[in-house]
Image (cartoon, rainbow, N blue to C red; front, side):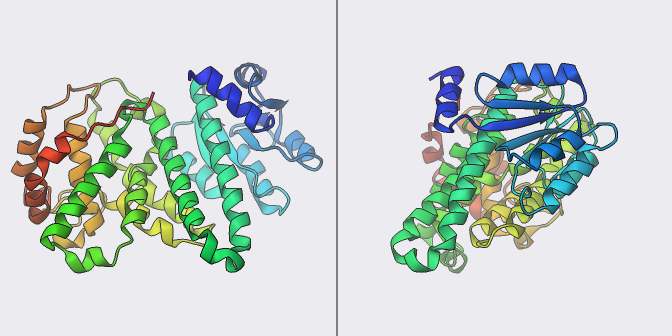
Length: 370
């Protein structure tokens, strides 16, 4: 199914979701309305004050809110919206032409769920909105379910787990729809982790630690290891070439950003346990055994086992995948590179486990998302 047909079917299923598009620039309002009107009910507003007045009578499914507006900025408006019981639940995506990370983080801290840099691609705008509306629907279902959980816990435990997995998968899809050069990366790395865990179990490596894990939940949570990339600017994340040293420093921030994003979600949910693994994966998968990794420079067993495992899965997939700045390495070359970094980049015990089952890695075939 092509994206147009998919979005048309999604709009019908969602009963014509209503979106408020708020921007003081008439050109931006026209462009945004033309891109979205086929799939959603679009109400365009040219000021924050008018938006607040509209919200007194009608609550939309989502708000696209410009940051830089006269009289009331987007930040001023979202503070008011999030302070009111009637409107605080409305998902808000900021529209911004700014590039500073501080502005983006401020938006997240005030309750925004995403930001989109102007001028925006209509297809990318549609995809981002679609993913967030799906997530909001799933969150509402989860909240409603939890309100009655005491009465139905025995019969609904499986449903809760499946819903949690769906939320994790949808958040992971949001990352991949932004970082669209790495389609399939999340699914492949999850496969690699499963192979490593099975091999570790066979030889009793780190047995006590693994015994304390919920392995199904851990594997689902691994999908969010790159969730911090939603804060990285599009012109860096989607750059069709090798990054400059300065750009690479920006990319490196995604590990810390990932931890902050998951902590933000944890503060707003009654069941935080299913995000604990995700937070560890997001923060520590770029740490190195010798302490030369980021963001904290942890070394040896200071690095959580989850992060040490993901480091191998993540690097292997990067090596055997095409990138704008390189062609894919062969499986054999990738194995050689990982083993040459045993004891420096990677936990030596885990590197040996990887080597013993590396042929199974070669057989993991997951088609990229299209």
